Length: 78
Image (cartoon, rainbow, N blue to C red; front, side, top):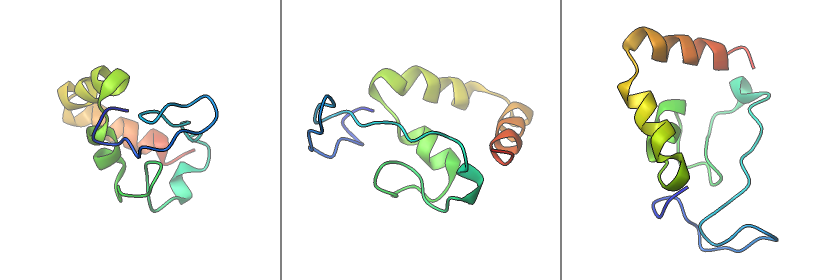
């Protein structure tokens, strides 16, 4: 998740800079994102990721407007 999202808490096998990703099922009903709810929009949650998710965050940034809109529509069905 990177240093920006690290909460400094070790939990079972997760290190201080890792956390278990919540499944996306039901994401359309959520108002807050990330492990601590600091993001109020899906796009903000994606952009906040670093570490091993940095490539995915960059791919989102590089996607066109239509591709991003399609992703958000898809998430609205989960």
